[in-house]
Image 1 (cartoon, protein in one colour):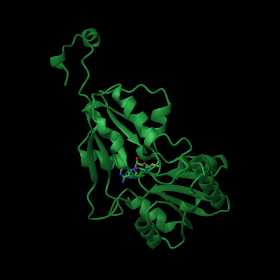
Image 2 (image 1 turned 90 degrees about the vertical axis):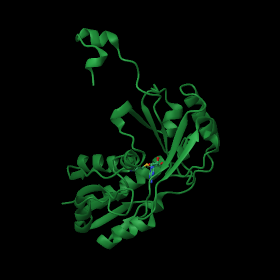
Image 3 (image 1 turned 180 degrees about the vertical axis):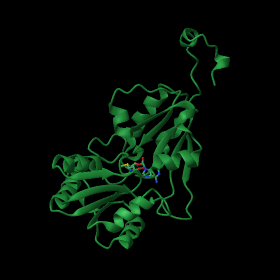
Length: 262
Ligand code: SAM
């Protein structure tokens, strides 16, 4: 009977794959890879020679929604053919990855077993490299194009993490590089200006994907955001303006004062 296990390989190919992920890759009949990185693919192929990339499904001009659907089709087909299938995505396989969730849903719908294991995501690396604890100010995390087009409530007292900043405003995400995004970036900067001063310092972050490489941490003022050099793996961090004021009414209800709250 076919089964599906979805694992993450981490962001850096140097040691971020969990032991459980490694073991599932080794023991699968077929491994599908959504790794976007030749060195990472090589590491997976070394563990299991029957590893096939899903990257051929990305094509300039083809909407990402179609690509993701085709990835899920390919995965589900192999499981329903009776194989023990492992799918390895880079990072955490459930963080900003549509086909992983979709394939699991469809396999379960067929009455077959499907499971996801957690992995080390770009956000995990970001927390470590930038020293930002999401609990310090609270944290809002979104996809750049959704951030532009949806009526989100942005709380500038929380850390903002904006993913896929290199594709901001790409409605169908049908391009394969991050150089065409100027109008989207201008709009994103305008939205941020409603909440932050022009001299607020933002961070464009790229975690290291290769051993001995350092992360790229580009600090840039909000007023200069549109000049930023972005790639498909850039993540934008907008640091918090600080902690919000206490709600005295709520403290009073519990008979507390600010000094009593940690
Ligand atoms: N599953 C991945 C994870 O767990 O991090 C995220 C995949 S999502 C489709 C792609 C986005 O993740 C990029 O546009 C970027 O925002 C972020 N990302 C991926 N690799 C990154 C890296 N090396 N450094 C910083 N952000 C990265």
